[in-house]
Length: 303
Ligand SMILES: CSCCC(=O)C(=O)COP(=O)(O)O
Ligand SMILES: [Zn+2]
Image 1: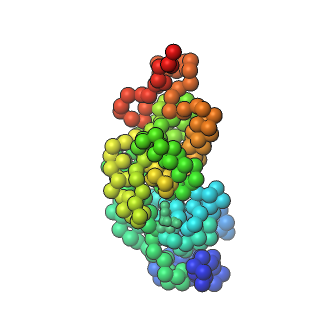
Image 2: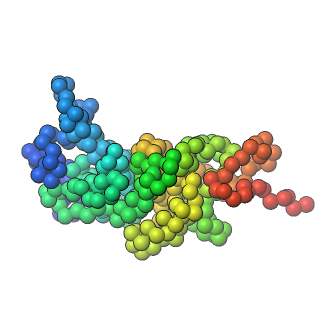
Image 3: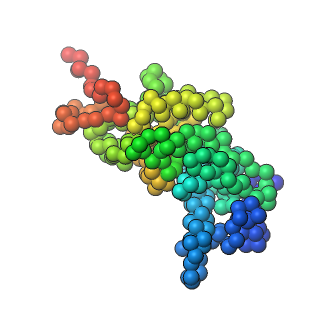
């Protein structure tokens, strides 16, 4: 299923219709590649239902990656999406054209043991799971370790806005992105579930990049420990990891964060510092931070 240039070729006609999910590997017996909404109406067993849901998750990852490619988030093969459906975690392969994934290309791991369950069939070509796998699992672990937290999806982007904002913070000698008083903050949840409000202070930690993606695991896990409410971690000069209770949640947060990074960069060009509330904010008495520490307030004006 991979062409000579290494890009993936979708081939249900050649492979999957004859070998559903290449069921020698998965144990499935029906054509699970058809999404639920497209399957013929008829009597459904719970096994059919389960197959259809699994097919939907695989297809969803392929669709989201295509969408994210066109946003510039998963270009040059890097970045990706992982989705958990109950006890199954789905992860795309490494180093492939992420906008050309096919549902059978996904790896499946057990949740919460993280043991490998299903690899793509041989006809997919020699695929390896995404290098982001240990980082995705570090985020899923939040939902296991913390009462009240739940992680159902993790997204890794190489969004230019995310990269630029880490460079802005680098110039300021800061190891966290901070913003307050912006509408899109309201789309971001704390890991405990509560949404931020417009006037709250959102803090997203930044870790240093490493030559190998997998070597980010330790510092990402450390950032998660030190910032227990942050639903994302920025990687300096590299990109963003963001997670949510569902894929919709993770995607929404990714979009809101991208808008906040963008706004920060543009505001900076206009001479505005989004780390602080605007002069005369009426909500200074009623603010919370993602952090346990003190809120940031504007420097007193020089006379
Ligand atoms: C040019 S991509 C470099 C590696 C990287 O940053 C990455 O996110 C790799 O993801 P993959 O899923 O392709 O292993
Ligand atoms: Zn990456």
